[in-house]
Length: 465
Image (tube, rainbow, N blue to C red):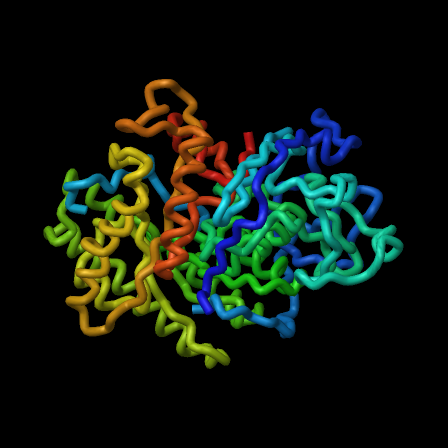
């Protein structure tokens, strides 16, 4: 049986408004949120149905006790965002508040549903949406309508769930686990403005668990990794995570996140942890600062050696924990910005490849991405003695641009129809040939739009603006 099961069981889709799905939706009513300097993994008993929120404590960190949950993993088992500049082009021939949500249903026939919802993140699935939701416990049908009378809506009125047992929530039959993985950064996860909440991440986890079994994170600041792993354990979903450690030239930042990873590995069920990714686009950023584009140059080799020392340090830290499973240690970078020195030191390499910046016609983008991956990563890894696992860690397409000048790159447009075309071609072909990839990304990122403009903030399957 194929590990990926594309579907084509529906011929057309309606495009409902948020009011169609939930007549009680008030677009002027802000979603619940709190500034989160420290994270307390909540218990369901701490939930307050009247405010649809959990109690928040903010004086010191109190980790949840690690819990072992039974999981039935399917046979598909095989980033605080740390970008310091705009998304990089991997071009042909190169060396390498209130919100409107977009919902892309992935499969043999792919459709987009534009849904207006409250501030935050997620697919709108309301108990008032005629027949769109089904009662579930970690994806298993259960109960009758009377069983859900005390269920509540998630923080952005997206998913209905049992506040006494977070593993019981409504799934939507229009969502299918068609993505190999998804890159994820919750809203409010960028220092110094930490505002990510358990409520928001809980909602995202309930939704992502219906699209994939894997999440890629970028760092530990703002308690992102704690929030995600705690939500996974409490929902008892089959999601697993590549956790990340941010690396720049400041060892203080690295040490803080390494120590956080050590605590996390001792706190949560390691069966949900697929690996620890040390650094994202560190070589790219260092080479850019030196106006270099050759990863085999002295600058590229020096950056790789810096990373290798960190990778070895993390591997040593993990080995000293005597965990119940081996945790792989890897790295992520732009697809053409790696070298043999780095690949020889990792268990896996995550390659960020964005055909949008290649000036390609969209109908060429999927094939070009696969060939680029083969030429720049697969061929290079074949020269190493350790044969690292190779994953496309970022692949996506922008749905819009904040300015007209950036709305096209060559013959292709940053819009929903073109995104739809790319998703159709990439996901079907990648799932067929079993290319491992993480769709970039879960939601649009307003902070990127404010900082960089253009298409930078508009790569999400769900939008936040």
